[in-house]
Image (tube, rainbow, N blue to C red):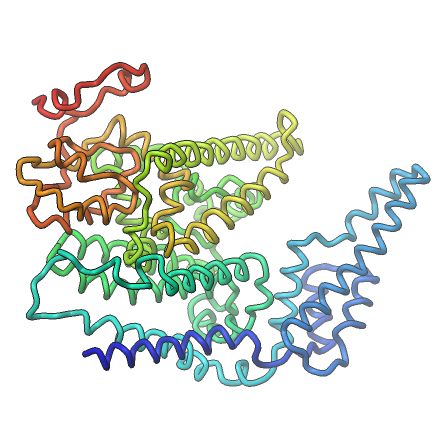
Length: 541
């Protein structure tokens, strides 16, 4: 069995290496007809920009992606330098109208990347473009096969079910050893390139173009690559979950649920909607996790899409204001965070091996409360500013520019916190970094769960042997053992109800239940700082 495991690891690493190395393969040679088509499609009539792009890209030998991107960016920068000099000249002469007219010809940094990516898609030549199916087999195919061969031998049919002492701190991959650090570096680099240098990974999109065209009729973008990769990773790692927690029906059903909502609701349906000329929408994504739902471009798109757009707009509002709190009241935040959410789905599958790294320290809990609620306030302020400016036509609200706050939130929270840190730091800080410290929707759900929900984890302190499995595997940093030893119900706003604490308990001390509100802490007492007799509340009938 070890030989099969090592073979699987070798095949997986081979596929991963080819996938990563494919960035450097092939060449990019743009034809003048393709450039003209691109400029016409974008409505670019700036003659200087057209001249600079032709000079940099046309009648050149095939270039690598880095040289091609550098040439595009160089042409765009020359365009900006020219108009910056005109702006400075008109400013000195106090010719304000002429100065203002020049800004329309400048290209911002975000458009630098978008234009470079779009031109690279038209210019790709070489092995990958000509052999997309083969490249899929050599990258995704080998990766999936290798991962399964590595995972399946863990299924010991004759061995005992359940998790007792699985040596999680004896492996360099799961004890913050050198393997964990290498995984962190790779994940962080992947997210940085994906979010901020997408034109560098255009070869990845060529590999998935056939699948994207079959689903939506469009070539693959970097976001299609991410979505497809997301689904593949969750599916493969779900096999590991099925094996590891095969003794626990709750975990089997929960894992199946997050797979369905990610693959069908979040990935396939939006792609199919695009093929039908509808606005692509993830129907499970609630505000404020879906932070750009109220952005002007999204509202315009929905309003201009007729009946389906209006339905999506109403659904998004009802989901946030009605469905979410009602479901949390009856089932706790677990219904979303552990059964529906894609972020939680990746954390529970890919991140399961790192859950023991969540900090249980008091300082982490204090930091968690400040950070996650600050992000929630940030998202609400951003939305208020955005809606005010959208309906009034103003560019700012009480001195806060709408474009600035939207861009700031998108970069700092949407990209860096949720992506680079939230997923990249799995191997060192645990699998729920984003969910615990940054997700504004988790903060919203937590408010409801903490003060008005029937969900709790009940404990039987008389049977607790203080093994500590529950606390070790709590991904949210809750010291579950402390509650179990006292026989107290666990009612915490951060608890996502993953149920792993119950699954790894050797004595059946912990149970996930939806019961009456009796026994919960009165929110008024908490807010006023009154003393609370926990045992009295727990035992109240």
